[in-house]
Image 1: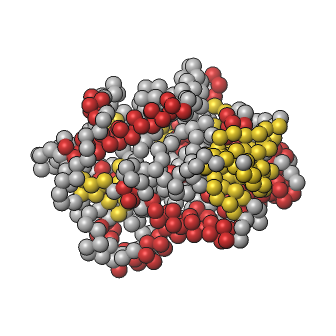
Image 2: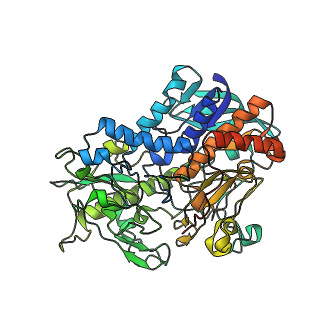
Image 3: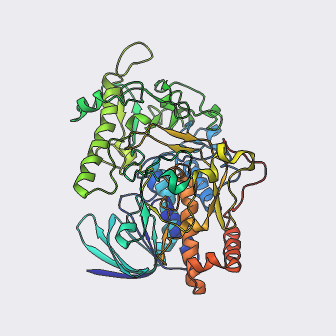
Length: 537
């Protein structure tokens, strides 16, 4: 069995994992990074989700390195793509002119930028990347993780990685059960958290839907896929709270819970430069085609694209029949395949039965773009995981810390140990317990260092969506810039502990050490407080 000795192991190469690795590498540390799928970047790339961000993202409210990632994506387009002159000069270039984000783009562009960011450290030997590889075991001595075993998904070869610090940046918190780190899943009870939206009794199997996203274009010809094996099943599904069949252009309005029909009008010829992606003003999903569009053909020289390319990540592909976390591998595999069947069924329904604006039915010209997803089958490489395992943390962030309804004009809770900031509404998709949307207004919030510290384990740190949130607050801490912030702080924390011979809990507990660490983060471009006067929505 192969063995690697490193200073910091980052398990999981999503946004949090990449940010953690970069932070530690820039501090001179040796890092081993593992990733299960073919692309680094997680929800931004292998899961194919354009960045969900707050409306001030261009000016403030993100770390310097996250802003560098965004700038790098735009510069890649300017350098490599045949943009129109006007688009090239557009400072806040939005290549897809999607309404969901100020930066809708193809996943592989983010992959290229991430690879470029990591290239110097691969070259000098301080970074080792194992990919595609999955964590499968851990060696634990009391409160300390000694080593982690990963398995190469191509040939089954196993590698034992010994590290001083282990960062769990996996999408589902895979290291938590393997290391015996205390964690929670699903919906906590109101008695435990005091949250007004929580149930009376805990529901550990009640988790947000997962989704297999996919990219499509609309061109001449008939590109109808084969009828999916589970099409009859999914065509008949009509959730009690949906107001229509699941396979439709309708879904509940997350805020009112009333059925909301959407329009689907491919290549509408809209003014891409006029798109104002600000979800605090307009949710942007009126025309599903432009909602998550990732290539707006009118921003490129004539003829470069035969069609816009849009990304399907709509409520209608949310799989919430059963959880895929905390079940045996065979059950998880069956449910993941069922989720894929739902996505294929949605596409087939659109191609054959969906109502068209001209009164006809079906869009046979919809063509799946597997090349954009980096797969043979055409769906994203990985499911979009909104919620996984979360550590039992020193500090647990609860609904009443961030909710507008609870906090009132005073804003979100201020933490003396803040190590970052973020903003998004508490956005819970339908869940495996049969719940409809839960959408609660939030105030711009802070990230407490205590939420990154397990209650017991000394050298394992969460570096993604597995921090000390609840089922409810995960709904606003799970988005792209916050995950990056979490990972970046975890990387710095591990590096600081190695530099000074301290432990994470010691840095948190001693005010002088905490202030020193916060000063370091500020110098690295990590914002700890929101500017005065910024309010939520």
